[in-house]
Length: 327
Image 1: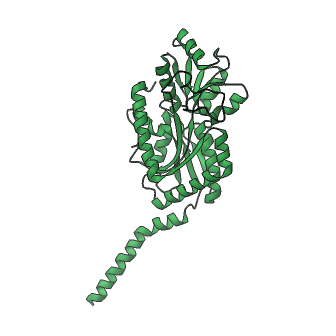
Image 2: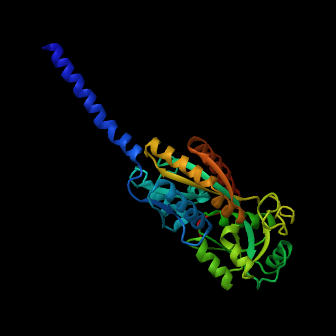
């Protein structure tokens, strides 16, 4: 009787263990069973939104479920970040994270989430340099002439960005420091709205990724003066770097990666990382990225987490030196 009771108890324990572990294992194996939301923390039209839509379309094809982009702009990406931080950790809500993901904690005194504790890195996707573009009505044919104009009229020229704490904002602050000029920052809720006002002449200049402004440059609606890359871009060989223009220390790259809420099963994040890597190997995606000077750079999980820590250290120092703060 005692042996029979022991065996019954053991069987109950085994069943109980499977009832706890089973659902997560099954959900990971069957994933995905419904559409996936990819949160973009900027308004439509900017580089992050454009790249996210290219990736989401191809990821949908691989997963057999729609991966749809949902724009949640504002507050230097913190609104979109918070949306994902509080989402269920089931793989059905993801963040397409740009560089401000690691910058916001140095710009905003209090965040509605913990940037380390509340997220699980999935995969780095790509990096992209910035270019300095101006409205064609600005009487400057190169960076030196722009700096001379700014020095002649301190405080009258303005540069726009996708929001406080974004990379274009900090790139502008660095440029101010290195060039010794006084220009005003005008933040927007995304790259798209900022570019529209730049084209209309409401603001005079912007640090933007090639992917978000190429069509306007080619149409003559914007003019490129320089790039923040260390070498000239293959797609724009006639555009000098800021370094060779005489303004060292404004080397800035933006990154784009996919991040899940903390607690998302590893089997799901591993599946996503694998499929994202396959997406980035497709000729169509690589061609689209290359044409826009965005370099595919796939780094998954743990290595991506280490990359994020390195980026936090770098941008924390830049924010401190530039004295950047919320307007």
